[in-house]
Length: 160
Picture 1 (cartoon, rainbow, N blue to C red):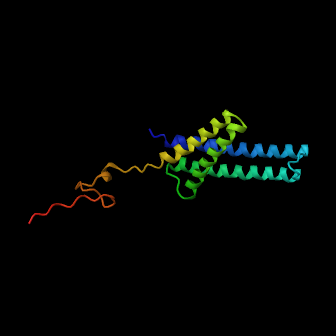
Picture 2 (picture 1 turned 120 degrees about the vertical axis):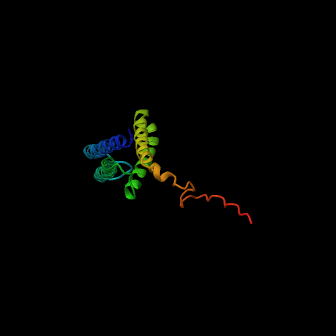
Picture 3 (picture 1 turned 180 degrees about the vertical axis):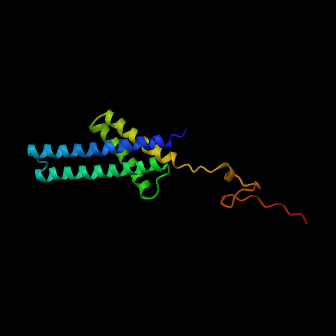
């Protein structure tokens, strides 16, 4: 049994939940800043509130788009390509960076969560990365290798 599809489904669920969670958390923080009329270094509290909400929506949409790519991978059972692959790689990098920041700011629990999500995304990318060829294509019938081999067989000795 292949582990590829279940990992893709798990990544899909985690990324969609994370998208909702990030958007909701930033929206909540925007409301808190707005109601307490807080300011940071003289910045306008209204602008900070709006910025937090916009940032949450943008980051939530980013994670939702990454979740959509993982969903398509799970449904099609094919490796992501092009922009989808780039999105998943960027999501892995983001989780690595967020994991590094959360250790000091939030604690080891958030760090473990970020690293688990990072590991799941990398596992998704790596399990679909192996190009499996049927056994009949692995070695041609004449046994000399295929034309795409980077190593050429030594030339046959010629006798006069």
